[in-house]
Image (cartoon, rainbow, N blue to C red):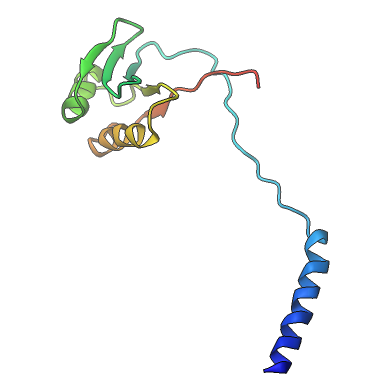
Length: 123
């Protein structure tokens, strides 16, 4: 038992000495860039603070929508063009689970171009 304790203490000392010398890895995080131009036809799913869904097409007034009918309504608004982007805009106080549920519903229904709207910040 005593030789195992000696080995463990030696390993502990080795790790304590070498740990500060190990360089930490640098992670390159993606950045949000500005697109050159906004697509002409965009379907936007707005998730409010109350977690109610609203659909907005081309910056018009949003209409209420329920999650079970969301995919069918989005496909109808895309008018058969699968390349029309769908953007999910959520309030920062909305639970992440709600946004993921909306994304999952759209992707399971075969909506190909689903993205998240982000706020352009200065810091």
